[in-house]
Image (cartoon, rainbow, N blue to C red; front, side, top):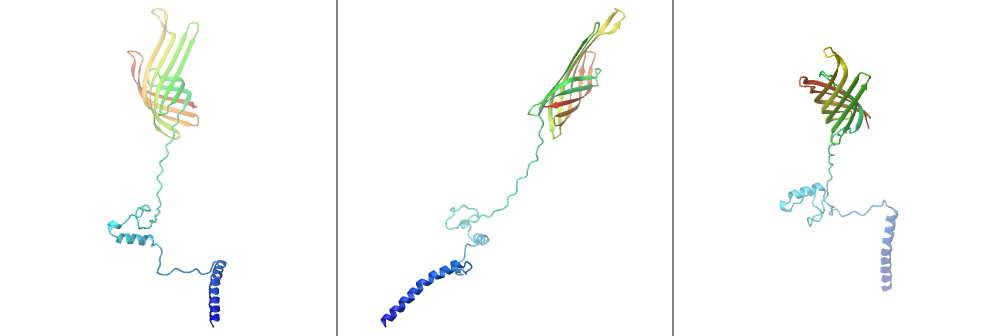
Length: 251
């Protein structure tokens, strides 16, 4: 009897030992097999809203901010950071680039003074980096015959300052000085002395006002209008209105 009981106990123990590996292999071969469920009374971490409600019910000294760094408050799990969309910063409007360049071309200025011209000839213009500019104009001419002489010199200098730069044009102000010299021999006959009379004119002019500079690629077209004064002698001087135009090739 004792032998039969011993054999039965041994067989039950062996069956229990071999049953667990067989169950594990069956679960591994069938991934869709039902997994063991956790007890109903064990719950995971509370949602964020439930944590907020619990915090509001706590005394003020026990409350903690939602974005406290991990480890700053012992006994609490690290809070979940709620990512909120950040509005993009508004883009500033792009400012048009001011065209700074060197340019050579032709310039002609007209005046309401008795002389009629402020300056004319070959012109050179340069824009500096700060929005200032300088323009120089020069035209020398001399002619001599057997009995006659003729000379003409026109020179001018202008200081420019950009007021409003744009993509295709610049508004600027200017102040300019011009000098014109003209000499003609044997212009009139003096019957009292029976000799020819020469004529010599020297005119100084100063003007200021606004101007506009249109530029397309390497071509620049300028127009400026201003008020000024002229001086030729103690008897000839006064106020005048001047207008000047110029064409430049920029490089």
